[in-house]
Image 1 (cartoon, rainbow, N blue to C red):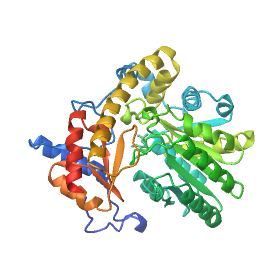
Image 2 (cartoon, protein in one colour):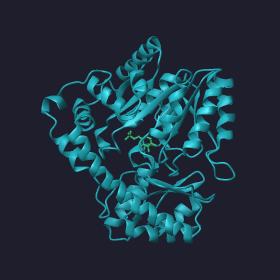
Image 3 (cartoon, rainbow, N blue to C red):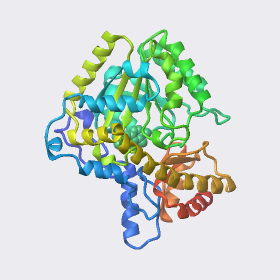
Image 4 (cartoon, protein in one colour):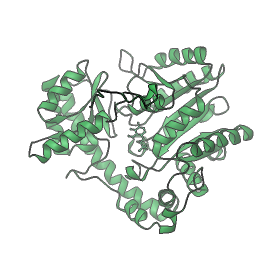
Length: 411
Ligand code: PLP
C-alpha cells in the first residue's frame, strides 16, 4: 500500500493523497507472487469463485452467449439508460413472482452493482449527507460515498446475542431522518459480504417494520444490494422482496442488480439500478434523474454485454441451461461452506451463521495482527474492522481444514 510522499498541487486538495491500490487486490497480488515463487499459499482474499483447481469458475453457457454477440452489438452505443430489453429482463429477474412490482419498476443499466450503488448515493442523498449500512460492510461503499461527496454511517450489524440488530437500525434511522431529513439504507443480502450472514424472514420483517415507521416522517430509500443472491440459501431475492413489497407506497425500494456473480462474468460490467415507484409521475422523475446520471458519468454501458445478459435472462432454453450450470457452482461452494462449518465449530471459531455465499468473517478484535501473522505463514485473509474475512469462494475444499487450523492457531 503505497504512501504518497509528495502530493500533487495539480490535484484539487480534496483529491490528494488517495490510496490507489485497493487493499484486497494488493494482498491478492502478494499471494499470487509468493505462490509463483514456489511457496505454499492459501489465498482467501479475492471475491471471485474459483474451482477446486484454482481456475476461475465460468458458466460455459454464459461464456458461449458472450462469444456469440454480433460485432455490431459490441460496436454500437447503447441507449443512455440501457437497452429496453435488458431493463425489462433485469426487472423480471428481480421480481419473477410479483407483477405489481414489475409494473411499478423502472431501471437504468450500470457498470455492475458498483455503478448502481454509485447512482443510488448520488440521486437519493445530497452532497455531505451519509448513507446508512451495517457495521460490517463491503469497503467500496465508503469509496463510492467519498467519491460522490457523500459519507457513510453504520449501525451495529449484530447485537450482544449475535442476532441482527434491529434496535440499532431503528436508532440509526431515527438519527438520519432527524439530522438529514432523508435516509438511504443499503443492505447487502443474502450472503452478506463480508460476514456471510443471510438475513432470515424475521430479520427482514423487522427491517420492514422499522423502515415503515421512519418513512412516515421523511423520504427513506432502501437499496437491496443483491450481488450474491444467486448463491443464497433462500433462492434469489424472494425473502427481502417479500418483506419490502408492502412498503413501496411509503418508502422507495431500490435494487442494485448485477450479472457479475450470477453469470460469473465479473469483467463484463453489466448491472442495473432498479427503482420501484407506484406513482407514475414520480417514477418518470426518478427515471429521468437516473438517466441524466448515466449521461453525466459513464454515458452508456457496453451494448454487447447488455445483449448477452438479456439473452441469458430471457431465452427460456438458455436460462434453463445456465441455471443448471450455476446449480453445480452452488454445490461446489456448499461443499466448502459445509467443510468450513464442520471444522470452524470444532475449533470454536466465532463467526455469524453461514449457510452459503462467497465469504465468511471470523470475529476477532485482533484482526490486523492476526491477519499479519497469517500472511507471514502464507495464509492470506482480509482483515476488516472486527474480524478476518475469508473468501471461501477462492479456497479449494481440501484447503478449508488447513485454513481453519491456521486461523485457530492465530486467534
Ligand atoms: N456489492 C457487494 C457487497 C459486492 O461484494 C460487490 C462485488 O464484489 C458488488 C456489490 C458489486 O460488484 P459488481 O460491480 O461487479 O457488480
